[in-house]
Amino acid sequence: SQQGEEDPQALSIQEGENATMNCSYKTSINNLQWYRQNSGRGLVHLILIRSNEREKHSGRLRVTLDTSKKSSSLLITASRAADTASYFCATDAHTGNQFYFGTGTSLTVIP
Amino acid sequence: EAQVTQNPRYLITVTGKKLTVTCSQNMNHEYMSWYRQDPGLGLRQIYYSMNVEVTDKGDVPEGYKVSRKEKRNFPLILESPSPNQTSLYFCASTAGGTDTQYFGPGTRLTVL
Image (cartoon, rainbow over all chains, first blue to last red; front, side):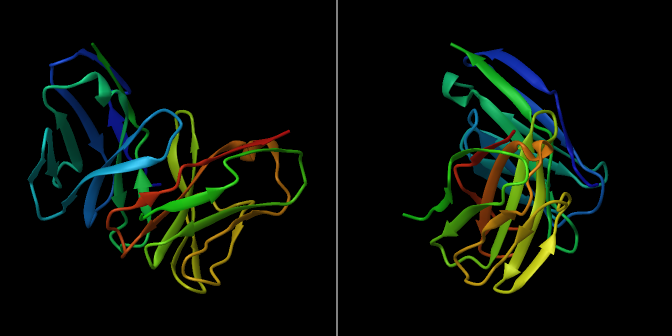
C-alpha cells in the first residue's frame, strides 16, 4: 500500500507557537494535499502542492515537498486554539486515479 | 451551496442485514470516492468512480459494492455487513482526477 505516515502522531503546543507536522509516502506522485479534520467530522481541504513545486503558502500555512525524500511538511504559524484538529496528508498514485491518506497528526493547541 | 451529502449519518444494524449508504454531490463532479476511517489507520479508499458507469476498487473493497448510474449519486452497498465493517465512512468528490476533494459529513456505522 502507498499509505503515508504522519509524524508526530500527536502534538501539543501553546497558543501562539508554531506547529510542524511531517508526512512521508512511498511512491511517485502527481501532487500532495493536506486536510484538516475536526473530531468525527468530514475532512476539509487546506492546501495542494504539485510534484514540481517545492514550497507553497496559504495564510498561516506553509507546505514543503521534497520528492527525492518522498516527504512533506506542514507548518502552521502563530497557532490558535481553533487549530486543534487532526491533520492528514493525501497523495495520489502516479496514474492519478487513487488517493492515499496518511494516518494523521492530532494537534492540540492549548489556550 | 456546494456540498456532499450522506445519509444516514448514524446507523446501527445487525450482521447480514443489507444496507445502503447514499452519497450525493451538487458540484457536477466526475470523480467520487468512498473511504472508511478507523482509529490508527487513517482513511482508506474503498471504491472510486471516474465517471458514470465507471467504478474501480480502492485499497479495501472487500465486502462492499458501489454503483454510479447518475453523475451526482454514488451509493455504497453492504450486501451482508459484518462487525469488522463497523467504521466511520466518508464520501468525497472532486472535479478532476486528484484535485481537491470535497468530503461529506460522514456516516458512523455499527454492525452488531
